[in-house]
Every structure is written in structure tokens, then in C-alpha cells.
Length: 500
Image 1 (tube, helix red, strand yellow):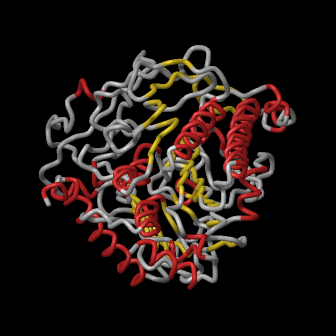
Image 2: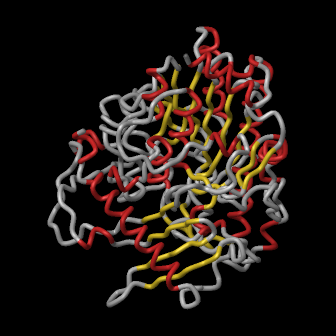
């Protein structure tokens, strides 16, 4: 049946039947703290991303692609499940998701795909005993880190003890991904490959040739000081922004080059046409990387304004997208699971899904998102006493070291809490809804009514002009929809979805 439907789809799109004769290979790439503006094709004044620029020029470009959350772990949970991270208690960096969640890898493994994860995981420990390791969540193979990594990364292979692999971090994980792809090809299996880079997350480092591309930056940005982590001590340090940007952009350029290595390999192995290759970031640019010069969007990583959530979004898939195309349709990391389910003919999990199928967008059949986008940094749950761990704490302890120390430790532990009942305080936290071009942002006040802002993102992408007084009815409508959605999310947070 799937083969017949694929043939009909190919004919309807005017493509040769061979374009859909086999299950597509799928490669999903994601940068760490890589914001929308930090690409050449989005006209950044300094950073060099020739590979991403070529993908934008020859493939499919999302003009408005969003991370589902302005921080890393929550966005990664949305990426894997198609659900907002608050549904599974992944509230902030260092919160795991829950073992009962259903991931893209689990779905595709049942469909006959060979599945592997490489690089940053940050959804729980990567050790074999963890109930939320890549292996436990559907991947056949993994070479992964609990959190982020730099040069010569220390990674866990299939849940084993960490091993140091010499080389530039992005190159290391792409080399491993290529080896996996070659094995899957030899086995005659379609492959699902997830590569989550450790770049350009601080602390920064770069190869001499990459650093040399940005030697002019220190003088231009010598007066502004920024805070980040010291590679030498693992503790906080304040440095001139120019020195920091030189290293940050070197990491982005190295990541870009590694993506180019993968693209060339797919072409050389005659895999490029029927491989869906996707790239995005996990949240907006971090504060240390934000420039003071005119900025197209408001906010940075950690904010529900667009500067905290807009990221690059690119797809290459010549069999389905033979000509360059772009869209202004707003899309999100929550859309990946439903889109891949639609592409592969697999049913959606029987639980609330926040994302939508983007395949009509890829085919140019819709020009506006049919449902709102929601953002929410959960801060509720206060005053309930010590929460009960959802997963045994020993199983939440990480193993892979990183440069940044926390509490004197070079490794990271994770948490997730049981949340069996809901109260009014659980609705708290910075939150936003986008429907069409209107965006409502709500921040809780310390006393009294919350602060509300309404923006028209088409005419005011920098979110400077609050239209609340001019359009109070529109704001009320959006606030009601946002509250109704929060109610659904909190119902999921109690664990109700898992009982079905």
C-alpha cells in the first residue's frame, strides 16, 4: 500500500516514480545555540557559512523556523517527540524527558530503519543503564554526550564508558555518522541519523585556520565584555567580546564545513537524491554572541521573544524538492515528528501532538500555518514541598565530562519530577502564542496583572511596538487560546497521556 501511495504522490507532484520508490533516508542535524541571524544567507556581517548558504540557495529554506523553547533540553524533547517539552517535564536545561515518551527513532525503527544518534543528547544520561538514553529511546547505535562538548570530545559509545576521540568536535561526529550511513547502506537498510553538534555552545575553541578567518574581530569588539566559561579552569570568566566572537564564529564555520563533508559523501554514494537532510538550531543566539549593532529580532537565548526562538531551518531532498524554494510559513521543531510520520506513512502516536505535518508546505500547497505556535518557560509548581523524582536519581547521573564545571563537577546529572496534580501556580512562566502574524507575549507580574504585549511580526519583526491597546479583542482571543493549550499541556504533565 505504501509503495502504491508513493507512486501516486510522485505522479501528483510531476516527479518520476523512482523519486518515491523507496523509503527516504533521513538525516536531522542541529546546532547548539545557533541563532537565526548567524548565517551568511541571513546576512550576518561576519560569520562564514558557505555550506548552509548553498543549502539555502539550492534546497528548501524556512524563513521563520522556531525552536519550540528558548533553551536546549526542552527543544530537544520537542524535536524527538513532536510535543511541547512541558508535557513531559523537560522544563529547562538538565531536565530529562520521560521513558514513556514516543520518539521518531522508535517509530522509524519499527518501520525498518536503522537509527543512530551522534553528539549532544541532553535528554538524560547516555549511559546504557539510563531509561532515557538514546538506546532506550529507539536508537540502535549512539556515540553521544550527556551535554555539550568541544575539541577532542569525550563521548559514550552505545552507553559504555566515555572515550576521548581526537579532533574538532563537529568533524568527529560527522565522521562517525558517515561510518554508520555506510554500514546501513551495505545492509540495504534505510537510515535515520541524528547529529546534534556541540557547537557553537560556549566555551569556544577553534582550529587555527578557522580562527584566522576572524582575526579582525577582536579590535572591532574590544570594549564590550561578556561572561562565559573558561576552557582552562571550567569556571566563569569575563573576556572582550571580540576575542569570544572570533572563537564562536570559528566553531560555526567548522560545523558548516562538517555538514559539507556529509553532503559530499551522500552525493558520492548516490544517496543524496532520496535523503532528507535537515538542519536547525536548538534556540536563539546566546548573550555572549549577541551583537549590539542593529538586530532583526528582539531577545537572545532564554527569551520567548523571537530572538530567543528563531533559528536557521533548511532542508535538502532532491527527490521531493528538485528546485530551490522558500516559505514564510512558521514552522517549529515540534513539526519534525508529524512530518516524518507523514512522509514514511507511519501513524502518529495516540496522544496530544503539538506539531503539524509540514509536507504540504514542502510541496507549496499551504501558505500559512493552520494552527498556532506556543512557547512556554515553565516556572510553576512552587510551594508543593519536595517533588518526587520521576526516575531513580542514580539512573539520572551523567558520565561524560565537559569543560564547564557545575558545583565542582565536570559531569551533569538530570532530573524530572512527578506532577500528579495541577494548581493555578502551574500556569506561570514567560509564555507566548503566534497565530498568523500576531504574537502575544505574557510575563507574570510580581503583583497583580501579568504584563502583556501584542506584536504584528510581519510589520514589526523586532517586536518593538506593543499593539495591546489598539487590538484588545485580538489579545484576549489569543490569551484564551494560550490558556486552553496550557491546560492540555498540564494534563499531559500529570502523566495522563501514558495511561491510554
